Image (cartoon, rainbow, N blue to C red; front, side):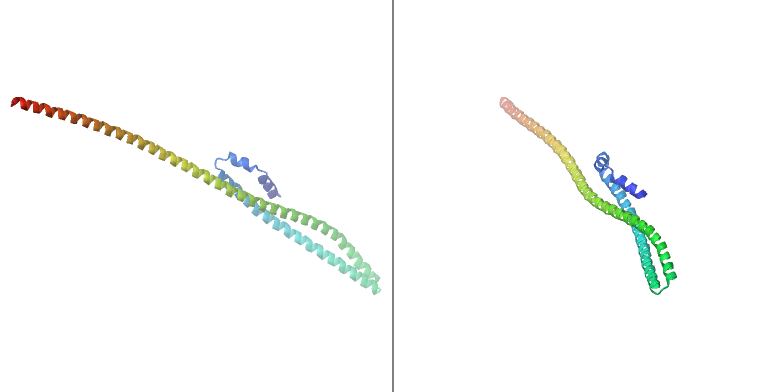
Length: 206
């Protein structure tokens, strides 16, 4: 069955290695899980078909077994009634069905074995997908946390740069303010000297 080879191939993939090599781990695991779920659907369909074949084989086997038992009863009744020819006819027909029964038993055994294997494969695939779904949820949680941490780091860097720029601007303003105050003080001192000089000149004129 092609689907069995397909499932075996998918399940043999080294998932950790696959995710480590992927540029987008989240998309990679989503694609992988989608393929597994698609194959699970095919396995379920194949299992249903195999189980139906098993049931048909069992029904044919049971019918043949019942027919042999019925022919045996007829043969015994015919013998009891003294009908030896009839008894032999029933026994000959029973022999034909007995040979058929062996073939039907072999067919049923094969169908039952195949159905059992398909059921086991389906159950294992369902279990593996459940575990991988849990791992996918955990991986996505880690990815979301990592992305949030990156955004926080980027935000802190931006705020840090803005704070640094603000501090530099504040220093520049403070320096300009200090220079302006120093200049004002210097001009104030000169004004006082000039007033004294004017007063002196006025006194001289008087």
